[in-house]
Length: 147
Image 1: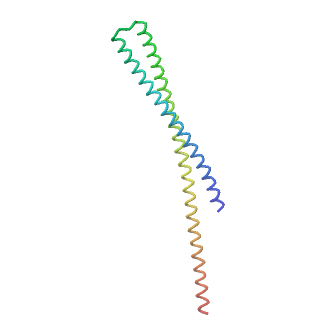
Image 2 (image 1 turned 60 degrees about the horizontal axis):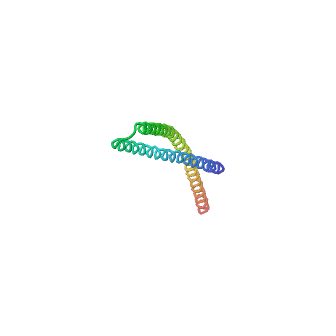
């Protein structure tokens, strides 16, 4: 019984570790989504800005303004590129956190399985003990009845 109590304590510890790993995974997953939204927004803004440049270009625009537009688009391109690299790095971290969480879950499930098997063995042993007691009682009663 003491071994079962120890296993239960270990299960609680592993459950807390699993919960923490799941929380860490979830946080990085949220960061990936936020960065992806930023990337999508910046890409859309860049496209809108280029469309605006094209529209203004049709009605005539000074060469200095074209240079400013292109410089700004270059900055937007750098921002898009940086966000894309950040997302790739976050996705790598996300996969590591997911692997860690799944490994922790398997560990917790293994301990849970051990506890269930131990309980099953204890129940079988208890049932055998009860059956032996009943058999002994029946045998003694039979012997007394014959006397």
